[in-house]
Length: 276
Ligand SMILES: [Zn+2]
Image (tube, rainbow, N blue to C red; front, side):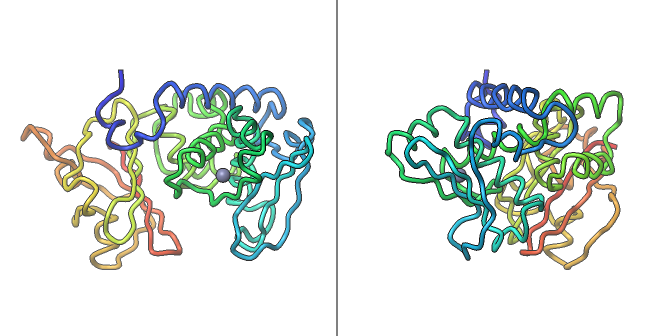
């Protein structure tokens, strides 16, 4: 059954599609890079995919090209600084998604699309791009490894930092992946221009409805203060349930949550919320 919050948040991929992508990525991670951070270049090499890092201005973040049976991944270091940044790794994994997802590779191989230029990082509305982004997050942060790392650990922001360092993934990608794996209930909300671009709650998170939906960031939250007062916090802050959520029962209003914000360079902010 599809739960209502998933219809409103991430309707782009069905639960079945997500499970299939996750299973495929998990298999590839275990087969070609069985321990620790994923070695993407090794996965490419083991599958006969060549790759290069080059300067392509603003043309794309990454690109998978097919030519006479050969596949090549281009990573644009003009947009991703160098080959080993978290964004470059995410882009590389995303391009591998275009190769390993059958319908993507077949479309390329059959010449239905000559190549696959991508802008990565959960920003595209295009279905194939969303599938490749989801594949990338599942490949870089394999479910079994994350569950082992989080076993019997209460959630705190430090855990996301640790996972991000271990797997060489951004805080945003790591927090989002953590929330979908569901080790413990958290909410992740990506906010820009004082509205919520997307948010995701782990199954079991106690409140589903946001106070103002996605239209406006609630003012009295930590992330709300960033948009209304330009105030930045470096620690996890206490926030009450009725400041973030649409509360049905009075007894729930004062439930205490912790909120940790990560501020982006483009004026965006990621808010991670969990019950204290
Ligand atoms: Zn792409």
